[in-house]
Length: 230
View 1 (tube, one colour):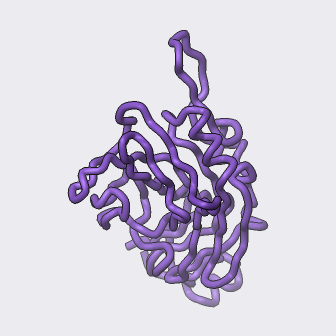
View 2: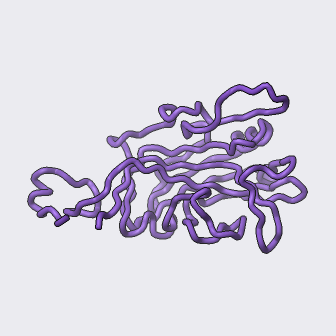
């Protein structure tokens, strides 16, 4: 389809994105990313920090050593390098964190009580705080008659339970503008250590070190994305 004229676009207030005067595919589009921890004898020492949304599909995860696929992330470019690339942007209306479904209460407590997050666009800090402030509105919920089972989430597993800025207070992440969502575990003398019995679902084996790598969290950026239309 041909591009609208600039005068028409300005008079009718059709565009709020950086791909000015063009047709775009605009819609709800949550982005997600999954960090890993490497195990030694069933225990995984968390790193002091995790730079989320920085490794896109097709590039090697720094912990697993394997190329990421759409189970781990749906980023197609590096957020802390080029943001959403040249053909996408995001009106971000929410940030959310969620534990992996197999984490027991002890591991959840270690993450919940020892972590904080920081979100920056370019060099400016926009959000900071404990994970309890940023529920994802996702997770598992139900009952079981099996002994020893437990599932925990940050907040309630309902989409409406995610903290939402709405479009009015959403943050605009323009094409080619880097952003950083960093998860910190600053406790001294070392970050917390997670412990696991067996090999949890979703674990991967690092081909170089042979370490079992466990996905321990999920992070989300919710909002409205513009994608180019050819």
